[in-house]
Amino acid sequence: MNNVYFSDLHAEHGNNLEDKFRRIVKATGFIDTIEKDELVAIKLHVGERGNLGYLNHNYARLLVEEIRSAGGKPYLTDTNTLYSGGRHNGVDHTITAGQHGFSLATTGAPFIPADGIRGTTYREVPVPGGKQLEKAKLAEGILQADRVIFLNHLKGHEQAGFGGSVKNMAMGCASVPGKMEQHSNSKPVVDSGACIGCRNCYRVCPADAIAMVEKKAAIDYELCIGCGQCVAACNYEAMNPRWDSGHEIFIEKMAEYAWAVHSYFGDRACYVTLALNITPDCDCFPANDAPIVEDVGMLASLNPFALDRAAIDLASGAQPNKASRFAGKIKGGGNPFLQLYEKFDNEHVFAHLSSLGAVLDYDLKRMK
Image (cartoon, rainbow, N blue to C red; front, side, top):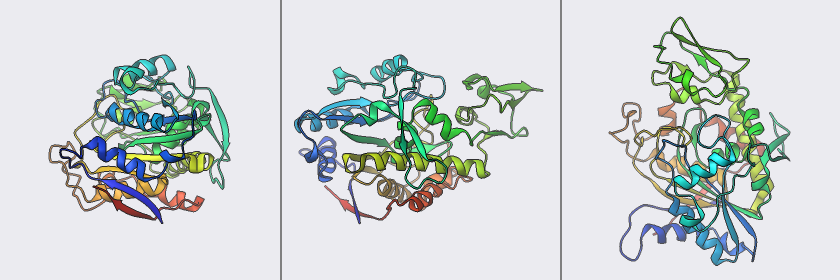
């Protein structure tokens, strides 16, 4: 049974949230394994420009302090995006990281883009037992770390259903070619009856794959890269992921990328998830809506898949947020991400991980 250490967000004098965060991380035993001068990556998401729902940089600072106290040399890292925006290349990504508080001055560690200036610095790593893939194209700047801590934010996701450890490992560790490989079967479709011709999708498409035909969006699938930005930008549910085998393949590819990362690092990785400010969309979207449920707490484990399972189970017991735009969808008492994205079977990622050999069972250790 895998231990998942959990702390709620109640705080008081002498036991504040910084204390509680440090406690769950130390409980995993990972900090004690760090040796002098080891390079320790903190894999995180700095948030897209226009989005304020990403994690507070002080959580990264606390990890930096713990790593330094153990003798390690920490650095913050993430990979460049497939789509256009403030993290599309290493220069813009580093500027965005600094604007959002993820800098040497504020955290005590530098931010270093893991896949280079243009997202093409990667190495192929085996996917043990993969169904869709034999190898994953993972960022060299993460693979070269002696150890890594994944700092995850639990939230919804417009294609994966939810984001947590798996998403941070799979898409987050993939180079730009690796992201394209995962997305290649997930190109969206247009519901012309719901499309009002607002052109939001047209404006955000990084591949110029969308045209307006008779005041309706139309996709050129020869140009489409399947990044999902149009799905996130549409306010009228007119732009939707494919719900056929193509989307199932996307989920399985994402699971296999995460499995490759986990297999590569083994016991040299630790995973921390903050189930707070649980927004409906990914932090990569250039806006953030109100959270869909109340804050849950902080979790840490050496098993990323059990950690995701535990985080969703805890979020399933959280009260819906009445101020959310999706208040009518989130009923409480069930997986909020299944309720939010009704057509997504986000449980399929767990089924596929299990088929690869991942262990999902966990023992929740509640800490004060």
